[in-house]
Every structure is written in structure tokens, then in C-alpha cells.
Length: 560
Image (tube, rainbow, N blue to C red; front, side, top):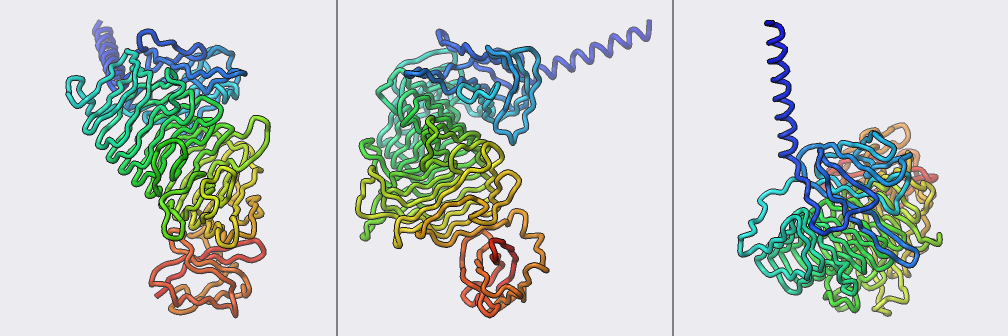
């Protein structure tokens, strides 16, 4: 009897602890209600931690019929179990981004379960279906949620559908609660100091002729956070000539075939994009100076940082684009600028190609300088390309029939691509770099630890890189893995601490490039008499790259 009592007590303790764990998990996860009257997906149903999560059907019907995938959204501070049921028998599942390593279990013919962490944006592709996948947006829990009674808050409540455009005012917060759908557009011209946030949906399909779900022009100190933007016509999220702009973890789903950019940053300065998910058939994230006919203003893009985004680019555009419209505010010589633009820690999960199979200038990473700008100091760091069907990289100064400035051309200078990994898809694709003429070149391009499959790319030949005679100074490095394992028997550089000259044993007439530790090219030329002058360098630590017979080695040295 005594033993039975102990067993009962122990079982009760376990039950209480289990209930506490479940209660704690529920308190750390918010699943949003289906808005009253909203049509749910017929392709997918989702359960998050035992609660049904509304799946929005992102369907756009064209002459042939098309969809860009359905989506669901919830918030959590922990990893939660998610069950997905679809309307087809499941034979395979791919969960992207692949870097997350999320595993699944098939629990029924048409059902899978997985554990989804907080703060990630996923594409669930069943049976190789990339035309109509399921997007799962696992948001972090919200903090400091605005009050519906605050006079400076325009509040859209959960479980409701609203119709009408939103025009933010200075000092205002627009709050779209999770489980709310606003059928309309966000339109702002000249307003500053406002915030748009929440976990709800702005769906502009009710206004098919108003082709921008978000159109914000000429403001400053503006924040967008967490909201999902859905479009069936034209550019989706657009910021024109804004400054001090913060964009955190927004989701942009653009469904039409053409002119469906995910987010355009036009003539803006001091922009920070953190996280987010961008699905479009045209350019996913694009930096421009202006756009004729769009009334977005004219500016020189500067200090733009995009970090941590997930990119799903279709067949008409580019994944990470700068261009084509780079005709900003010009100087006395007719040249504008686009500078200090940085993409980092980004997953390009798909970059498609034209439906008819034709190839063009589209790429996962691209600069199309079709105007008069000097594009400079641009970096791409830690970019993972999971599936690409056209070019990996396309950098160019061009002149097409759409050019506004038909006289002046631009320059592309000082572009760094570091730790780029092409992990899947077609691993035999080309890349292209083309200048325009002897004055308007593409120059000073660094490929540092650019990896295709399992191979680090060390030359243009190995990269299948096509160039023309108006391209100068392309350098291939491998500093991510090579700087700490130099083979002194292959390249002997001495003294490693020098004052005026470096000596290179056995490599006379080889080419060399001297760089700082950030990868900026400082010197380049041909080794003569086994000596390289470094008189003009300031004191510090540098990298030197020696190239001969399409092979390269890197060493460090210190200039006194």
C-alpha cells in the first residue's frame, strides 16, 4: 500500500510538471485567429503547438493560372512543433533555408511534422513543388505592443478584415495585429517619424490598379516591422527618397509574372533591412536612384544595409539587384553616385530563369548600371545560393533602350564578394562582368572565398566568368580558409616585416595584388626582379596575392 502511494504521488508530480511545461510552451507561442469571413488555403492546413494556424491563399490567376505559394504566420520565443497537411500524397519534402537543417517526420500519407525555431522564415516544398509551396513565418514574440486606446495608434484588431488605404501621419503607429487583414495600400508622401508594425497582412489585391502595396516617398525616421505585404499587381513595397529607414522582418509576397519587385529602395539613404522574406517573380530586393513615371523622387542611394533576409526570386528578375535606374543627382560632370551598399548573411533559396528557357542579364547577385552613376563600395558577405538557374553574378555598365541618360554612362568600382556559397541547383552556370568603354569600366572586383559546390574559385576560368576588355583588376582570394595555412614552400615572401620592399622568391614576372585585411585593393602589378615596392603603404598588416599559371597563393606581411 505504501509503495502504491509513492507511485501515485510520483505520477501526480510528473503530470503537474508536464502540464506546467505545456502551459509554459503555450504562453511562449501566439497563434493568430482566422479573420472572420477570410478564405483559407485549400492546399495546406497547419497546426502549431496543437492550435490551428490560418493559412492565407496567395493565389493569382493568369491566362494559364498561377500561384506563388500560401503562407501562415505565428510568433514564439521557443522551438515549437508544427504539423502540415497538404492535398497531395507526399513523396519528398525540402525545407528551406537549408542552413537551418530542419528535419521532418512523415506521420501520414499527406501529413508531416517538424520542430520550427523562433525567428525564421521557411519555404516548405513538397514533392519538389516550387510553384505553390507553403511559407511558414515563425516570428519572435512582440514586445511593447501598442494600445488600441492610444490616440497616436491606428489599431487593426486580430480576427478582423478591414478595407481601405492607410495614410500614416507624423508621430503615429500603425499596428496590424496578427490575425488582421487590411485590404488596401499604405500610402505616404512627405510624412516622417511614423511606424508600421504587427503580425497581420496588408493585401492590395482589392486595388489591382494601385500597383504598390506600400508606397512611402520623401520621409525620414520611418520603421516597418513584422507585417506581411501581399500584392497581385506591380511593385510591392516601395520606398522613394527616404532617409533613416528601418525595415525589420517584413514579408513581401508578389504574385504577378512581371513588374512584381519584392522591395525597391529608390534614392534612399541610411537604410537598414534586417531579416524578412521576399518572394517575387521580378527583382526581390532592388536599389535604384529613381524610376521614370513612378513619382518617387530622385536621389543618390547611400549607406544601405540588408542583412539576414530570405530571397525567393522567380524567372523575370534578380535576387539582389542594384539597377537599372541609376540616374540620380548629378555633379558638374554629369555623374551621380550609388555607394556603401552592403548585403550580408542572406539565403537565396531560388533564382529562376525565363519560362521559355532564354537567358539574359538576370542573376542571383547583380549590378546593372544602365545610367550615369558611379557605383562603388558595394559588398556581398556570407551569401548562400541554394538554387540558381541563370547567372550567379552579373556586374555591368550598359546602355539599353530604356536608358534615360543617353549621353553619360557610369562606372562600377570596388565591389567585394566574400564567402559566397553556391550550395545546390545547377553548379555549372556562368557569371558575367562587362564594362561599357575605356572610360566607363567595371574595376576592382574581389571574389574572396567564392565557393561553387565543394570548390573554392581561384580564377575566372574556374568560375566560367565572361568579361570584356573594359574590365580591370579582378582578384580571387581565399582568406576565409587560407590565411592561417600558408605553404611557405610554394610562395616565399620575405621579410614578413618590411619597410620598403618585399621579395618574392621564384616568382619573377608573376602578377601580384596587395590588399588590406578588409579586402580592399591597394597595389597591383607584375613582380620585377623578384621585388615589390611597398613604400607607399602605411604601417600595418596586409595580404599579398601572387598569381601564376592560373593559380594563386596568399600571404600576410607587416609594413613597418
